[in-house]
Amino acid sequence: MAVRKLILAVDHSPASHEALEFAVTNLYREGDELHFVHCFKPLQPAVGPHYSYVPSEEEQANWRREQSHVLEEFVKDARAKNPGLTCRAILISGDPREELIAYAETESASMIVVGSRGRGALKRAILGSVSTYVVTHSKIPVVVCHAKA
Image 1 (cartoon, helix red, strand yellow):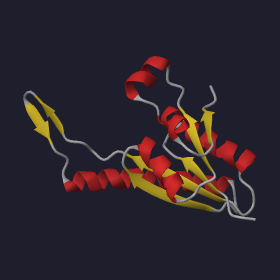
Image 2 (cartoon, rainbow, N blue to C red; image 1 turned 60 degrees about the vertical axis):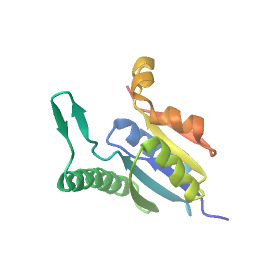
Image 3 (spheres, helix red, strand yellow; image 1 turned 30 degrees about the vertical axis):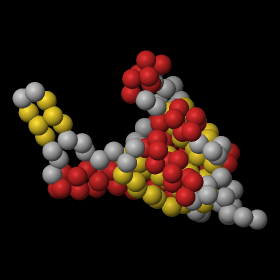
């Protein structure tokens, strides 16, 4: 039987932990690979009428280290709670919506599991939603898990 690759989107929200619990309990089976993917946007320059800011290479490196730490802590916690879990940790810089889908396609993944923070319709419309984007653009099945209230 072929190895299934399950992509789990990771951030520091409670919804990510719900997604992990759901994936391990309902989807993951022996022989599968669970890919913990943490996508983050690099620091962006900012320009205003009386100022401008361009992040330095050092600031970008520090930001990447912070994001790497988020992923490492998530993986450490997941392995502690689920001994024997076959998983990989992937850190990607870019737009999380597009990068998750691109990574899943590159890996020939079977499924993407994402958490949803449960923002209201207005916030989703203004800020965008990773889960909504992935559901509407992915060519493979997507499971969306909400954080417990």
